[in-house]
Image (cartoon, rainbow, N blue to C red; front, side):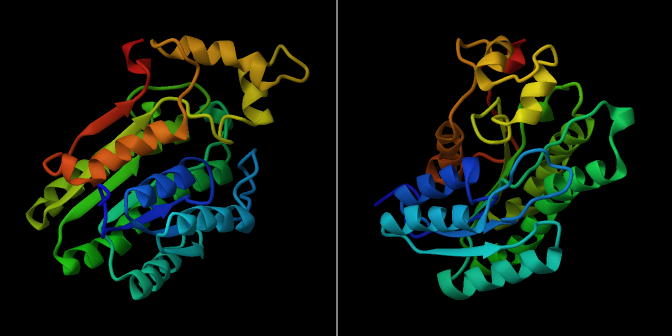
Length: 276
C-alpha cells in the first residue's frame, strides 16, 4: 500500500518538468493520474513548452508503474476545456482526491515594458488557469465525499519580489489569497488547500537562452554554467537549485494522510532563499 493508494490526482502542466515529476511520484505511491498540459507554444513565452510527445512520455512512465492515467491536451485558460478534461478523467478514473495546480509560464521584462499580451498570458495561465482547475475539480471532490487535498504550486516569488517578473510575482502572490479563501470554504468538506513555494527548480523554465541572457547580459552567448553562480547566491543552503522530485516529495506529504490536518499553509521548499 502506497501513501496515496486508491486516490486520483489531477495534475496540470503534467507533460514534463515538475508536473511530470509530481505525476510519477504520486503514481509510485499508488495514485492514478489525470494529466493535463497545453502541449503547444505560447507567443510570449521565450522557451519551448511541452509537446504531445512529452505528455505521452509522462503517460508511459505512469503506466510502467502499474497505475492508470488519462491524458488531455488542453489550455488551462479555457475553462470549458478544463471542465471537459475533468469529466473525461472522472469517467475513467472514478473521481478526484488530489489536485496539483502546477501549470505556469514565465516571460521577462521591466514592469513598464510588459506588453498586454505578455501580461495576459502569464495572468491567464498562472492565476486564471489555477482558478479554472480548482473550480472544475471541487464539485467532483465534494460529491465524492472523501475529503482531499488541493495543492497550488506558487514560488518563492509568491513570498518575495524579483525584478523583471512583476506579472509572474503578482500571480504567485495571488495564489496565497486564493488558497486561504478555499481552505476556509472547503474545510467543512475535509478538503485541505495549501501552497508550495519552490526555489529555482532545474526545469526548462530556467534552462533556456532567454533566462541566461536576462541573468548575464554581459555575455554574448551565455550558458547554464554562466548563470549557475548567480543561482548559488539566491539560496542559503549550498546549492544553485533543487530537483523536481524535491517539490514532488512535499506534494506527496500534503496529499497523503501524513498531512491530513495541514491546511491553509504556505510551504517553502526553498533551500533557504527566504532567509536572504
